[in-house]
Each structure stands twice: as structure tokens, then as C-alpha cells.
Length: 264
Length: 269
Image (cartoon, rainbow over all chains, first blue to last red; front, side, top):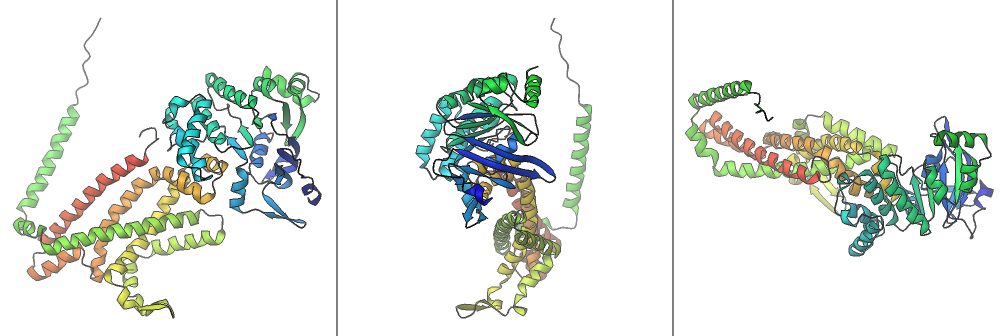
């Protein structure tokens, strides 16, 4: 562990994960994940369900605590503070502060149902960042405009379609100005005809240089937008590389099987 | 071809309505002919003593309920804490104050001077407990704390009813636990909490009558103090009944208003 910690340095990638392990009871969800994600990069994580891809994403923003290894975001060790050769667990408030570096988009949207679209977007800036309410609202409207929902600012989540809700959720995450956006199967809960509008918003985000980690089953999106595709299975990264290589010409048998199963 | 649609006739409804009306009329007539001097009851309905008692009842019920809700929320949050000590304190609190009959709790608070003759911070300020523990204070603490034990379970149920994805979404935008509870979880839990809490409030209005045993002059005590003098027992009990029903009717209306407010964003709002 001690030598792991010294690996972080000033020229850090946006995310650095080393030997990340996570178990749920006797089930090992992650069995040693090593991954670097650089500023501006779009990484798509693919793999069968239960492969640990969502768990890994949730470890990055500390919705899960890791059992072994370490993660750094922008060079800062996540969840712990180094004191000599010991790692001290951070307080809840410090963890909340660290989470500000990441924005998270959930599979089931998780919009706040008692707040309008605009209130969903401004809640974090006003309550957590203490942004002036008017400024937060004008920026919130701008963000909702970016995801094509200017006309839905005052709608409650229940009045929006799944695709619209997920776009509000993206705007809500962006409102915190994170350095890294995490997407946990953002289109898996959507009706097929609504997938396109969400992917199109994500495509625009990628084009604007946002650093993104996307757990997805949309191989077409990965092929088109990702700088790198990571294939996970059984809690390990089996293979990673440019989309053309991983999706078109994978070297590992497990990757080949998965891709042919998805495409068939 | 437009055929006329004939709706099913609801003979059963008319029969039921007639039967209900007949029963209600029979009960009203029975009460009217009973050995109750309604004119006396009417006379005392707005007697000064009764109205003062009514005011005290409402004041005690509202304040004790507020204490119950505030403490109840605190205990519910403690109960869901990851700190095991805090957790067990909450469990013990609910066990104790839900377990002792409210009447006994009132009497214990009222007689607190037997255990703690003085209260305060030694050297700074001290009061004699008998001076502080007026009937009102004893009833307020006794009813409020007993209520908080029940309210905490109602609130806990509400908090558990909110989807765990809401906690995660709140965390993901950088909120810590208490802020997430206050801004995101509690407002949603309110929809589940309010109907049973309204129930508890109505219960509280009636429980204030327990305070008559420690000589707090709420409406029940006021009625008693009058019938001890004029022996019109049943008439004055009906006066009290009338006012309890009146207060509870108003509360029921308020409850549906408040529920509508917290239903915003809900599918059937």
C-alpha cells in the first residue's frame, strides 16, 4: 500500500486506479483494477452484467468504499489521507468535498421528484457550492438549454419522459462543474426510441472536451465517441484499447464472445 | 348506428342511503329525548371557563405535538445512524417512552421534585423544581416526549420509504448526510409521514384530557370543575365532546391542506 500511495504525482491523470479491490460479502466484485484516465478522454467500459463495471464507477466517486488498492482523482488520494505509513479514513465532509470533482449520472436517473427540472439542477450549486441563487438559476437554464430542455425548466420529473429525465440528470451533474463525468448505464432504463436523444447529448459533451467514463451496452456509441474502450469480466479488466481494436478485432476470447453475443 | 347507452341502475345505493338516514335519525331523536338538559349544555358551551379551557387544550396539544415531532425526527435520524451508541440510545428512548402509559409519565414529570429537588447548573443558576414544574410544563413534557417516541417510528418509516437512489443522487452532488436528509429525503418522506402524523395529532388533542389529573385547566378539567358545582355532569361532558369534535374537524381540514402541499411532483398530486 505504501508504495502505491507514492505513485501519485503532480502530473497525475484525471483518474488513476491501482489494484482496486472490492468485495460484497464473499463475492469479489473487483479483483484488482488498474486504469488511468487522462484529461479530456472518453472511456467506455463494457462487459457482461456482474463484471464489476458499475461497481468500479461507484468506487471512483465513493458511493462504494474500496477494500484494497487505491484511486486518485487529479492526483488526490480518494477516501483517505496519508499520515506517515498509515492511511487515515477521511471524514464524511471531506468525502463530500472530494465528490465535487465527479458528476454522476445514474441508470434510473434519480432526479429529485419534489423539485422541478430547474430546481434539480440548481440544488447542488445553491446548497453545496453556495452559489448565488440568481446566478445558479441562469446557469441552470443555460445547462437545460444545452441538453435541449429550455422549455421544461418548470416541469416536475413525473411530467418528463425517461429520456428528458436523464437529460435533466446530466444537466444536474454538469451544474457542479466536475472535472470528470461518470455515466452508469445511462440508457439502460430507457425505452428504445428515447436512447438516441440521451446519447446525442453525451456525444456533444464528449465533443466539448469533457472527461467521461461511460459504463454502457451501446457498442455503437462506444465505437463512435470513445477514445478508449475497456472490456471487463469477472472483476478484472480483460482488455483495453482504441474502439476499433477492441470492438472490431479483440484479441481475448472472452471479449470476442461478449461482442458477438451483443451484436447478434 | 348510435345506440343509446343506458347506465346500470344503482338500486342498492338508494336502499343503503335510506337505511343510513333512518339509523342516524333514530340516534338523533334518542339523544334529543334522553335525560339531557340540552338548554343547559347550550348555555355552558360558551362559558368563560370552558373557552379558557378550550384555549389551553389547543395550546397544549399544538406545543406538545411540536415537541413530539421535533424530538421524533431527531430520534428517527439517530435510529438510522451508523454510530451504534447513538443507535441504541434511540432504541432505548423509544422503548422507555412508548412503554410507560402517558398518564404515568404525566404524573412522574409533575412529581419530579421528589427525585430532583432543584434543577439547573450548580453555581450558575438553579430553580426549585416545584416552581418550574407547573401542571402545564409537566403536561407539555409528558405528552410531547411520549408522542416523540411514536412520532420517531412514523418518521423512520417515512425515511425508509424513500428510494436509496435519492441518497446516492444527493451524495453525488456533494451533500453530506444531514443536508441530504433535510433537503432531499425528509421532504419526500413527508408524503408518507403526514397521514399517520395527522392521526397522532388528533390523538394528542384527546390525550390532553389526561392533563386534568394534574389540575391543568384544559377543557375536560374546566367541564369537571363546573359539574362539581352544578351537578350537570352529562351536559358538561357533551360540551367537552362538542369542542373536541370541533377542534378535530379543523385539524382534519388542515391535514389535507398540508398533505396537498407535500404532494407536489407526485403522480397523483
